[in-house]
Length: 605
DNA sequence: GCCGTTTTCGGCCCGACTGTTTTCAGTCG
Image (cartoon, rainbow, N blue to C red; front, side, top):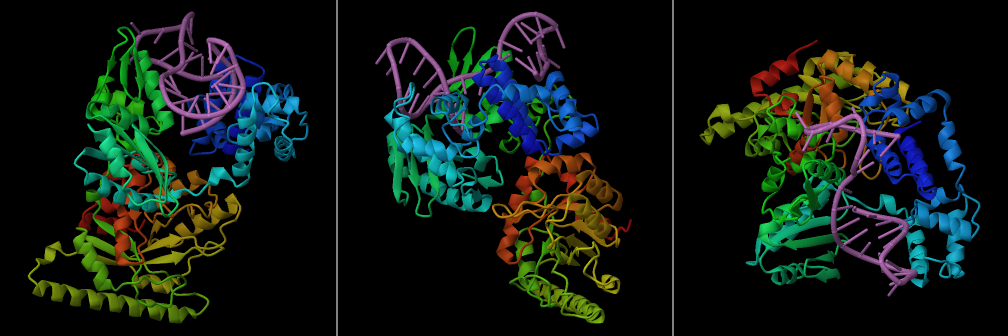
C-alpha cells in the first residue's frame, strides 16, 4: 500500500465521518493525517517496519493502531464499517472540483446514483436533464457549475499544465521589470510557490507595495496580455499571450509584511504558524496580527517584523512547507541546537561537474553545443574554480571495446592540449593564472540494464572520475532497479557521482523506484555524491529527498547537466533545491575549494 | 483523533467566495 493510497483511504474515512456528522475535529485529524502521509519522503510501510510511525505528525495512538492492522492484514475493519455507512458512489465525486462530502451525499441520495463506476457520468446526465436545480440547497447556477466542473474534471484538471521553475522565473522577471518602472510602485516581490522556489509552478503571483493602488493596478494592466481576468482596488489578474496567468496584489507599505507572509504560504506552514500564534494569544491573517486580549490589530511593514512579533527569526521562503521549520525557528530563537539551517548560497558553489561539450566522442546520447574554451570562459564569468567535463560515454553498440578505449584516450589528450593552449592564450591577456578554472576530465557513464557500466575498465585510466546515470529501462521493479544501481555504484572506485538519481522528468515521467536506504548506505560507504541535477525539467534529487540524504550522511553535488554554456546559469535552481532540502554548504562537495575537491574526487574507497 | 515551552485536558487556522439563503453552509486555498 503506497503513501498516496493510504492518504486517499484517510480522506475517504474523513469524508464518511463528515456525512455521519462525527466530531469535526476527528474529521480534521483524518484529513491532516492524510496530508502528513502524502508529504512523507519515505514509504509509511518502511517506517512501520522500523517502528518509527509515531514520529509522523498527525499520526497518534488510534490511527497508528489502524495502520498496524492495515499493514498486517491489508485492510482496516473499523474503516470498512465506517465507509459502509455511506453510499460508495460519493467517493468518486469528491474528485470533482466544488463537490465535497455533503454535496456529494445529497446528490447521490436524492438522484439515487448507486453505481460508483458511472457516478460522474450519471451526475452529468442528471445535470443536463435539469434534475439538480430543484434539489434543496442547489439551484440553476450550481447545476451549471457542476457541468463545468465535471468538464474540467474530465480534462484532468489536477495535472493541469504547471510550469517548470525556469519558465515561471522568466515570465515573473518580465512582469517585475515592468512594474518597477512605475513611480507609484515602491516594492515588488514574487509570492506563492515561485517565491518558495517549488519545482513546478501553477500561476504566477506578484505583490506590490504602493500608496497609490489605483495607479499600480493600471500600470500592471499595461503589461502585454490577451485578457484581463479581473481587476479591482486590491489587485488584478492577467492572462498572458502564452496562456499563463499572472496575479498581482497590492498593499500599503505599512501592512506589506503580513500580505507577503500570507500569500507566500505554504498553506501548511501558515496553518502551523497560526496555531503557534494562537498559543501565544495572537491571531494571524493577511492584514496583520490581532492581539486576542485587546482585539487590537497590528500591522507590519516587513516579514522580519511579522515573524519577530511572534518571537521568531524570519524563516526563509524555501523552508515554509511545515517540514519542521517553525520548531527549528523556535530553537534558534532560544539559542538551542538544531535550529534553522545555515543555507547554502549560489556564491558558495565553486564548480560545475556535469557539463557536456561538443567534443565528438561518438556518444550514446546528446553532444553539447559548445567548445571547451567557451565553457571555460563561462566558468570564469561565473567565478568557478573548476569544471568537470562529463560527456556521455561513447556508444557501446557502435564501437568495439578497443575503439572505445582509443576514443577516451584521444579525448583526454584533446582536452589537456586545448586546456593548456587556452591557459596560455588567456595569460597573454594578463589575467593571473591562479584565478583561472581548472578542469576535471570526467564522463557520464550509462548504468546498463544489468548494472554494469557502459565503459570498459581499461578506459577508466583516461578519466579523473565518473558520473553514473540511468538512461534506459526506467520501469524495472524496485528491488531489481536497486540491485542494478548498487552494482553500478560499486563496480569502479572512480564512480564518484550518481547522476539525476530518481530519473524523473517533471511533467512527463515519474522517477523509477529505488530502495533509498540501501542507496544512501552504499553512497556513504563508497563516498559517492548524490547529484542535485539543476536542469529545470529534472531538479533531481527532488528537494523532499534531500533531508533524508543528509540524515544518511550522504554528500551532495549540485550540477547543471549543461549542454550549452548558458545552461550553466541554471545552477541557481539546483541551489534552490538544496535550500528547500535544508542543505548547508558542508553537505555539498562542490562548495569545496579546488584542492579539497580534488582530493575528495581522487580518493578511492 | 491529535497534541503540549503557560496545557496530559481542553483546546483544535483564517478568511474569501459562492449560491442559496433571509443569516448560513459548503468548499477552497
